[in-house]
Image (tube, rainbow over all chains, first blue to last red; front, side):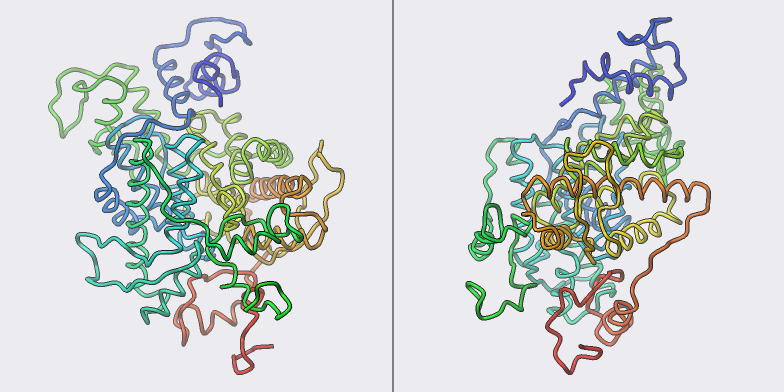
Length: 277
Length: 277
């Protein structure tokens, strides 16, 4: 990890590019370039802000999980599921902490809607939740938080959080057994009877976004107090599959060391396959 | 979209939070608060930088696709596939444009490695590529670029780009028919004979990251000249499935309006299912 000092003084590219952008080209004081004139205080302030923003993790302040969920619910209708979950966390911290959170254009995360622009891949709430975790967590715990989030989402009935002023009073729940948008939504459609492009389904995803935002806030709060403990684990059935298909196995051909279910997609295992039903 | 003027003068939360963070609390000039004292030029410069950073899309400058690919290849080994593809684009623009690119902590995108921390969901190169597209593209074309990227990745043999100084001289190719990490890697393992956690597989993913970065750069360059045209489309077989399972269909239960193949997962359609093999 680059330190702020390195960014400010050593890594010439950043110094030069900030200076160029702030109209102070040629004024840069840097060991690698010839000093001509002192940079303006404004240029230094902008440099400092950019250097602070490049350092992860960003400062964390305990979040109100319900306020975070409510922000996520509202943001869903402003920019979809990934933006919703990401803006829930980052927006709350922007309000509570200020810089560097105010430099992050959270709307960029709108790309993740419906498993990335309708491709049905990763649930956008989980995509945005993981991104937010990486902004504020240290590298010793952030992956544990992601694993817990994805396992929780896959194993429990969703959505869990009911917004204070919902568009629909009641939303059915379903268990996805997967972090994928397409699987999660289809299971909900089958459980609820509503269509995949219905307003009820959109509301369900808004509640899921709020639920994810709330759970991430709770995990981050626990983690900040060094009291985080994972409540969900990788199922034994998956571990069994990975004994052959995972690292060091006889047929190490699966690049997914964490999953809630293998057999929900792999339904066609022949009778000779070990452990087949 | 909020304008810079709104951010600087109207949206009190941002103004207040920046001021608080920069130690200028109580100095803020804002219609909604009582004016006490003029903010320092440094605080104004930081506010301006934060306001600029919140505005999307960020300014674009034509990229060198090969330099972008090389940066992606190197970044893969620094922080994985998602960071690799994202840093390829944003890092090149940071060097060429400066602010606001220097405020974005691209390392946050490391979360997407191996389909998000080993979950095998969305290919991280595609996750980071889509995020980068949303940073620099307007809302009329950005979704078209994502669709082209995901279709290209799924339909063509990957990787396409050979780095200048690779760790391995030759890497086998395979066609994923899917934007998912797990499927993409398993098909490559089956085609190449290498294991999913082998150094050859890592190198393959580094080349894929470089290939994605290069293709995104080429698309963004075309788009900046208003000459972008999609070269890949959604296959007719998928369109046929969505006639019943997509919007307005008899069984609208699929939340994936774009995909390269339905039948590679849905292998168990009974003989009575329309169009089944």
